[in-house]
Length: 175
Image: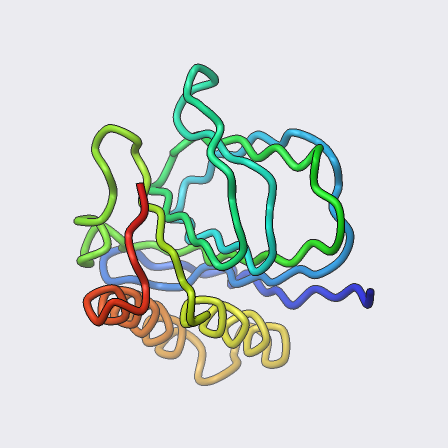
């Protein structure tokens, strides 16, 4: 399998309206370990291929399997763990880091008990958006697509598309 990474992290991030801080897509082999994560930005984490298991909020929470075409939305400072020790085959995942998620309808999808939202994406709508954002950033750099305006626009499009696709039924909230 060919390995690749498309990613870019913009050095300037603005609060308020949604603004994309980082867009990444990785393809390669699984690193078999348990990773612990916590980010000060909103995270939209996407599994293009099966991606082990995840637990959110506490080590006492149960593990949840991450099948292909699932997305997790984590508000800022959410702790989560990914266990890929049992995964075989290719790794293909991506994520967006962004600010301003609290000003979108996505906050309505975050479950108060589990502290995150889980989306099923059978048509690959979110996956294509994440691929495009990562590729655009990697190809264009910090000033790509007119800089700040495009990052805000991209974040709005992602939030709107996610909500819109969810309402159409092509993306579904999952327990």
